[in-house]
Amino acid sequence: MKNYPSNITRQQFELIRPALENFRKRTKPRKYDLYEVFYAVLYVLKTGCQWRQVPGDFPEWRSVYNYYKIWSTKAEPTADSLLEQV
Image (cartoon, rainbow, N blue to C red; front, side):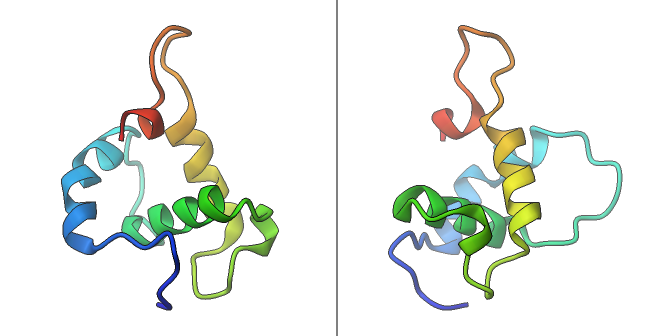
């Protein structure tokens, strides 16, 4: 994968991986590596690009967007979303 300005290391990602994995009930095997999905979310947030413009070396933009929606959902109106927590 190409190095982008939003890059985080795998070691940094391992610190937040448990929170990302446990946020959603796992019903089937994951199609994409969560590191690559999170990296793509950071890329969109950092660059402000449209979801459809996510570079091709990231997972499919629809999948990245779906993870973003899940991770940015607030459990309660006064609570922080998972992305705000990490």
